[in-house]
Image 1: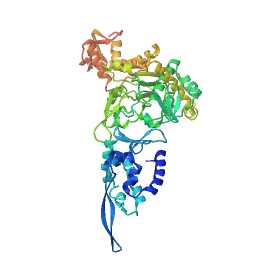
Image 2: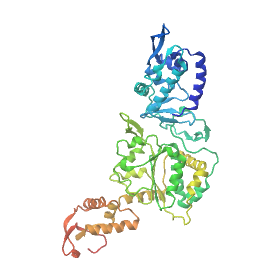
Image 3: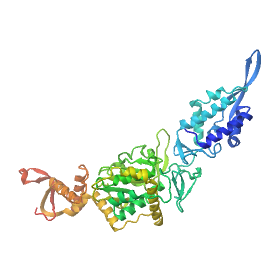
Image 4: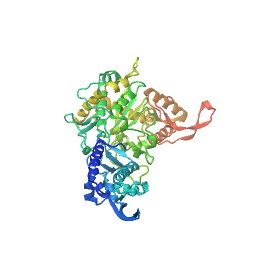
Length: 516
């Protein structure tokens, strides 16, 4: 791992100090890490061995063992108070004084840092009547240091909530901590407990005319722009405060992906996770999203939210603790289900609503790009926005956050937006609504499955609704007919066009307004 500025400065000053005063390996460590010594005792065990040299017998002090607790604590706050390492959510994190955030480091990386410390001591003490070769070899090998790492996980452990954003008072920008209340930029500090920061500097007064005029102005109505702005403000926090899922749908080439990618440019690619609903039920998928603040499903198909794992999505935005497994670790960790989520599609995305209609109604934020595609599309628009206007887009998002905070982090939808949301939800219930709207109980009528399928296709086409999976919608239509009329599928429907051949369908059910 790259050393931080604090570590480098401390190393240089301590090396100069040690060369003048250090006389033995124990002193070398205790002078550098006095607080660790006061808490955990001497770092090394020494013993004497007899050495025969030039017919003269002398005693040499030899390093024989490490104090696991001492070296486990060295890289914590006792040894490096300005750049401590901690263990949380199945991984070590070290505060980087250069970037201002906690970087995740592997067990092996921390092991190498301990190994480097032992080797430096050995090089500086060598030749001073001490046998420090064990520090260079058997005491610094991976097998031996594995015990130190295991002890470090216990000594440096912090709760799984260590990185949770509890007060939402600051936003970590690329150039400092922005206090939301008065937009004052403050220096980074390890006390903020952050592992994510935006990929943009805060610049007071920066504007974004291309983003607002050329992109949003040509693609959305004013109320939709306000919705996008408030959602963008929430995305800055790294926490889904109102437990919402942004669904951007509509015109192909109408600006959806450009908007989403502009948001990614501000939030930072390192903070983005790919939303894969077909894998959300897999053992390690939630753990793979650890440390991500925004999950993106871009250009998804209509059945994206019909995958089995999609049912887990509601929990992932609800703000509740969730259990997750991390590869190559034992046990489970707790992850706060407060991911921001944005889904973009050129078609209407279907939901598996079942009996959960109200829950989805509370979750969904519709952002419908239904204006015509620009005749002369600027293919360089996204690049121009990201190159020239990212600080301005950040300020626009901050204004959205201010508006959201005034509403106590609640998204209130006007009548038009509420109708768009409900229309989207109705599309997910297309088979059931089709039965309610188009079919009725008729004495003596008969209706084949083929006739129902044809009518259903026409019904969806008129409304620009997806029909759903061919494996699911026939069964859903049959179930709704049985529930509504108490009539089940029959295998003996006779048709005139097939010379009396019997097919599947329904007796006593007909299309409304049709002469059956």
